[in-house]
Length: 456
Ligand code: UDX
Ligand code: UDX
Image 1 (cartoon, rainbow, N blue to C red):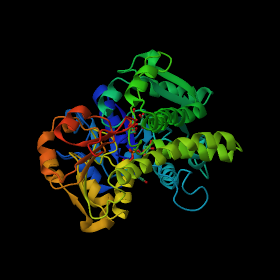
Image 2 (cartoon, rainbow, N blue to C red):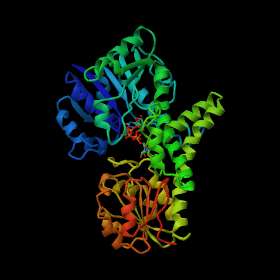
Image 3 (cartoon, rainbow, N blue to C red):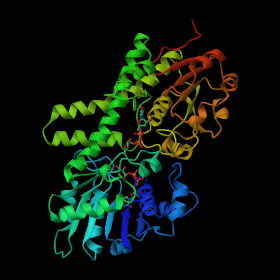
Image 4 (spheres, rainbow, N blue to C red):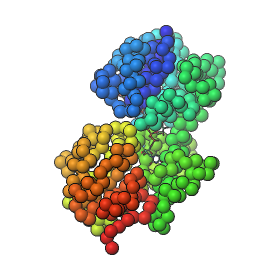
């Protein structure tokens, strides 16, 4: 039996290893993390992350060939292949602050592997990293006196939160980057063998290490660019009475463009898009490509502007003053079907509304606890309600932040009746039936569509 170790039991490491354990019963998969609480949660009935289908998946293999522990040293000693999936946040200090990736956890992990490995190993970069990180890792692993050989591969993960289990079971592609020499290609073959247990061979792409690292950044940059592009058009729609849904549909039916990722919104969030684009921007600057850097940075700037524009609109429509008014945010997670709030537009929008002295109510089916952590400095200026009806009661306005299915089925007449009048609704995800809401009595403001106002 071969031993796989994954260092970092987060949104990427946990689900990915659960699938490998399920599909490859002849491999023993150990997942380690420095965070003991997180490991305890992976071993419990309440996993540390919410992901549809994940609990059932983990329960099938946990204790059979999937193990979660904090014993990183033992894990390294047993391993034949090590996946590294520790976080690589944006640097907050020193050179490249606010843009470059903070690689300190990454380097620390490489040093630990070097110290404790007792055989030749394949080390797989699962985390998204700046291009040429594999080279730095190889240098650390082979520094000083060392009889071991470490072959570093790049194998970026393309799963999206909320659909992780399905994305892992049926990936569009698996990408594996390695060196173009005998040892590199032998290591690539080992990794291909693992994925070939459930992924068709023609969907497993192999590439050189740098192409693989760069492809991950580029895939995220292209996806985010689509969201920023459609959001930029939503502003034109609002100015011209064009309708963003009609425009998206017309544009997306061109098979060269395609219909996905053209939903206008309050902006993209999540741990990856902003971080990875800034990473790309930093890389361009480092390689003296300022025009390319400025091009991609605009995707992030447009996203920030979309969030500010949303708050500006709320203030303007509500008679240019929201101080002392009650506003309920429906949804706080950065997208539906996750409890994750990293870079969620709701965070920035909440802060801006709180600066305007709004009395904020927040409701979300999965992310309420995390919301309270994200906004803890505002203390009792924010109320957290599990029940959307309680959140809306006596409010002057509601704003949809996350496209949770359950919001579509609420009793909107009841919500309207319980609110202060005139009652406003700002649908930051365009998920509600705006005509119906207007009939119930709401003043309705979608994104990228004409507002429906009862105030002459
Ligand atoms: C993270 C990055 O955000 C992403 O870019 C990268 O591709 C993979 O890692 P995610 O899994 O969502 O993605 O991050 P997170 O949920 O924060 O998990 C990282 C885990 O690594 C944490 O549980 C953390 O405790 C652990 N970790 C971090 C270690 O075990 N050792 C360390 O030295 C640092
Ligand atoms: C993304 C990539 O999709 C995934 O391949 C990569 O591995 C990690 O980053 P994730 O951030 O989990 O995944 O979710 P995603 O579905 O891509 O959504 C990102 C953000 O864009 C969310 O805030 C979402 O609401 C927003 N979005 C997406 C829109 O606003 N409009 C759209 O049409 C699509």
